[in-house]
Amino acid sequence: MKKRHSIWILVLTATAVVAAAGLLMCSTGVEDDEAMWRKAIMKDYRVYSPVIPDTLTFAGERVPLDLYYVREGLDNELIVNMYRQSSTVLYFKRANRYFPIIEPILKRNGIPADFKYLCVIESGLTNATSPAKAQGFWQFVPSTGSHYGLEISDEVDMRDDLVASTEAACRYIRTLYNRFHSWTAAAAAYNCGENGLARRMDKQQTTSYYNLWLNSETSRYVYRILAMKTIMQNPRQYGYFLRKCDLYPPVPTRTVTLEGQNVNLYSFARNNNSNYKVLRMLNPWIKTDELKNKAKKSYKVLLPTEDTKYSTLTKGRRSTEMINSI
View (cartoon, one colour):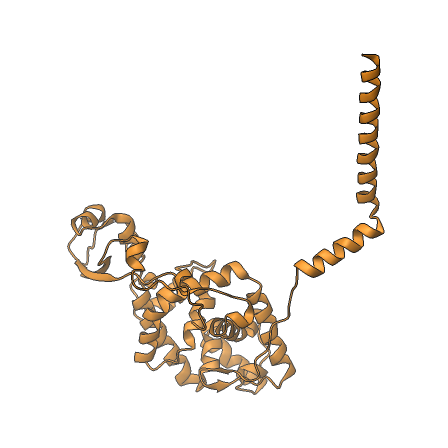
């Protein structure tokens, strides 16, 4: 018994010595350990600087990449968005659902397709709300939204209607272009306001966005658009490997008229073979569960044409092929 007890003491002592040696190695940073750690980092973790395109345009207008500050401005935004992986992956996924709605409206209104990337950087293709109370995919503040024809009330906020707000954005962008005669300047003015941009142009005696000294947000604004355009048009070049089946599918919809006063929207959804959640998801401009509608207006409401099962939405559209551009 005594002998066994002595053996256990020896074992425990030896274990303690080994453990202490391990702690010592870790705490003092033994050279061999550090070398091994450096090799592991070099092998398993690599960060690359993004490739700057040889040439680039925005809405058909040349980006002067030969100017060092322009090149570095673009590089900065490419780095930020290339390594903001979670957000950028979501942009790809959402774009597959929403770009097919946005693109035809831009085209019909004569607005260059590159402005869809303005929508990406404004809201991430969501009905976001900013600290300044800007709302929706196109981030209209109430005054600008109302000026360009969007109804905004406690019951209805058309800044959150993708079709209506895109039409309004087209009218606003056209106004800006007509003033500045440049799509690049129109994009900058969308951020800082047309009068603000005009004052800076007058003071600095230049009409080129790229040569203007601007506040931090506006000075980055067009570069952010250009970065998202570059990454989304060349995903694999910037480390994004998405399959077509990874993207969010469009939701087929039908249009139903919503009219009358004191309409209970829970009942309205059920009576139209849907549910309240789907009604609110497809019509985020609705802000209440009962539409009093004192003005007796008529609204067009979207509801799904099929069931909302993922297998139904993706039927015949699923593909493991990698995306090349979006």
